[in-house]
Length: 319
Image (tube, rainbow, N blue to C red; front, top):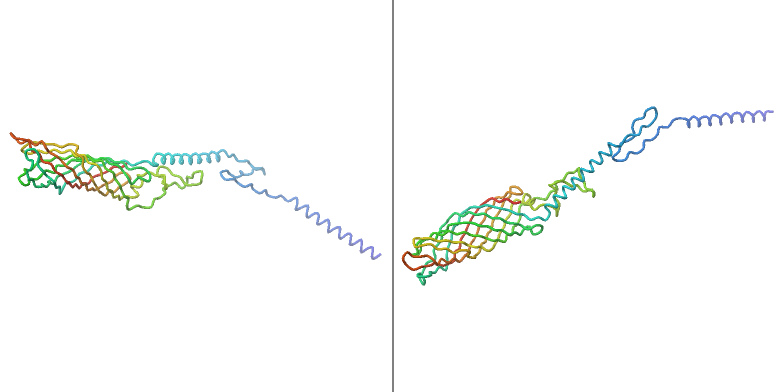
């Protein structure tokens, strides 16, 4: 009897414990669980606020429109940058310049007489100093040959022939037309910088900019004028000389006589376009004046070699 009572009591206690455990699990299963928010994709907005326990689905039209607007802006900036580089890439550099200065220290050599003066011993007269003024236009090649250029210039001076050895002084007007090959060297260069908008990127993820975008190969040669403001240069070429003389005995001329025109100079750029320069020029030419008419007498001439120095300064515009 005692054993049966103990077994009954154990069964009752075990049933009560099992019932309590089952009830606890049911209560936990019925407790509400807050939903986890869905991940938000870039360029969109998250779910809207809830109302009455219902999640509101947001409209994404504005987000899509904003993303499209930024994409259009990026494409426009990239297109402008490409157009600018296409317009300036591998383009040459043209310049025009005006200058003025002085002709000095001119000499002559191998002077001899012609006509009635044939065989007359003539000293080599020197040339007077004079003003010189002129104009030039030039072009530097694009790309890697941007150091090499071509130039056409014209200038006037009056280096009169001084009286010497019984030879009367003679007025001389000299016009020179020069065709030069120019080589230059850029100095005082700063490091090339990328001036680009950090908020604009192309499809490869690289920054792009507008008209002031610089790259190693895609840039206007004019940029280097501001980046390298100091330039030295030299040139040599054909000179065509147009000369006219006059004195108390008459007048003579010698036109389109070929000779040497050489130059060297230094140029300083204030910006990409404007530069101040100083330049030395040397001219070498043989001139023949065979038509000097002595009043009431025979003709007489004077031929020789003229060596002329010029120092000029001026202002240039590059474009």
